[in-house]
Image (cartoon, rainbow, N blue to C red; front, side):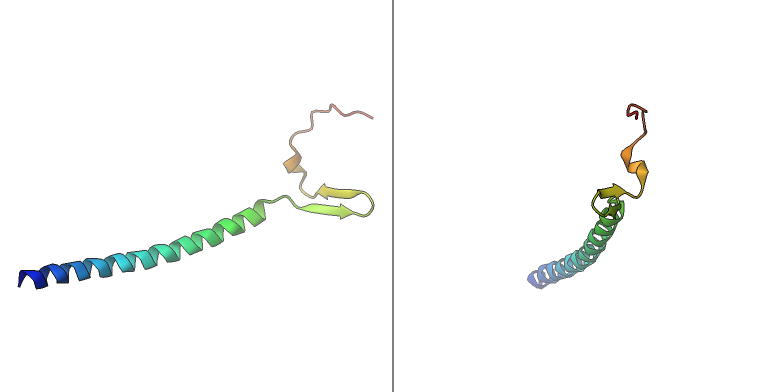
Length: 71
């Protein structure tokens, strides 16, 4: 009878662990998707000027202007 009890307990534990793995796998996939969304949105956006080059649309990514460049 004790063999049955141990086997039953192990099966119950395995079932619980398998359930937890499924939940964590789902959460992991959602977190990975969110990370990818955040990485895409944090990349600076550029405007292409023909025959000149690319310039950032949001100038805050350039940092503060120290006034060192003069014409």
